[in-house]
Image (cartoon, rainbow, N blue to C red):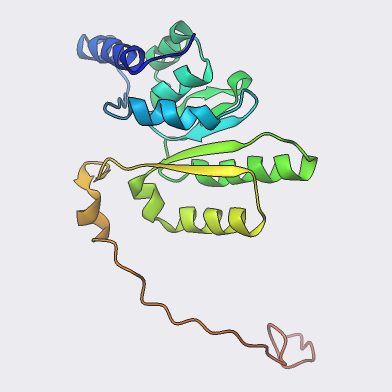
Length: 194
């Protein structure tokens, strides 16, 4: 059965009601307004693909096939910000950017094994601005790994507007040139032990 935006909103509303009633004494991160975008993104997610992310991953879990009762039980146990359903190929991390190298490692493993699966990694606009994402993205591109980065931009870095945290994005002021050196990476041609 295909889920609709209304289904995803109803699940979030149920979790919000449980939290507001004091039945979930743990952090809960809900999302709203991105249901259509998530459903569209999942059109490219295969059954054997991996889905990784950080906080606010409830809808992705539902779209990947985690039964609502099983997901709700995990949230009630306090696992909202670190969901893990390996049988559905879902992993999350509560650490901003923490899931990125894990996603990269899974994609590298898939490529080395000659697999056909893909990794779909969700990250927020705060994590997108950090160095971890740029390193992971560069490595993935350079090695043509089967990974797809999906940035969810809500304009917030935790509780502060992202533009206030990082500044407004502007084109980088970069000078680049290529060269070949006659010298090795370190030293002057002979290895000297100190």
